[in-house]
Image 1 (tube, rainbow, N blue to C red):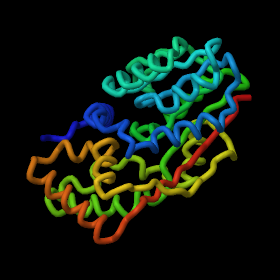
Image 2 (image 1 turned 90 degrees about the vertical axis):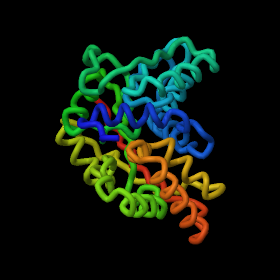
Image 3 (image 1 turned 90 degrees about the horizontal axis):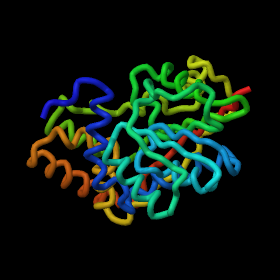
Amino acid sequence: MEPPKDAKTRATATYNAASDYYDDPANSFWQRFGRETVERLGLRSGACVLDVCCGSGASAICAAEAVGPTGFVLGVDLAEDLLDLARKKARKHGFKHVEFRPGDMLNLGLPEASFDAVICVFGIFFVPDMEAAVRALWQRVSPGGKLAITTWGPRFFEPMSTAFWNSVRKVRPDLYKGFNPWDRVCDPESVRSLLAEGGVNTQDVVLEFGTHPLRSPEDWWTMVLGSGYRGTIEQLDVESREHIHKDNLNFARESNVKSVEANVIYAVARMS
């Protein structure tokens, strides 16, 4: 299968494919870091919130809980299959004040200065022009409101990430690290610089070190299938997929890997 030629198409295809494993218990990091992002905003009851790259609703549902029925949350994502998952969660919670719709962060079609908070968790790096994306999000923040951008920190999912890419290189060297956009902003200084270039100045950029547990080696493969790695997997034939699968599980067993690094950068800015 040929890889999609542009970043938007590639991200959409990747996460629509990943929707079947995205909310597996092995991938609870989406919920964990989405909630932590929302908690950093200190949302008030009745607030109006925009969540861009909302995925299956991890941060949007948490925001809906925080703002209550007098507030409103709009979740936007490119992947319609993830939005379907998010809508099911909203219905399960009985939330009528949260809406999910397909959309592109560079073409939101939303009024400027119309949200008390704008959230983007693990999404800003998917567009080639990240500065333009920051500006687009910042423009939607109302006076006194806040922007929260969360990205992956250094050593994303190590040591298993390196094991994954080494396995890919054995069978398809042309795909080696071909879809790893989060590496562009994986330290506080690069995040702070990106925000400044997009017109947002803040010192509230924090790197938190952490881990994500693996209950078994198979959990790692579930993480691969339910995350951005899926974009690479989708380009492999059955034999190559199985080779990488076995190679990764063998590495996890032989190295006794019980967790992976899950270091995260949180950035919050207030509109004056």
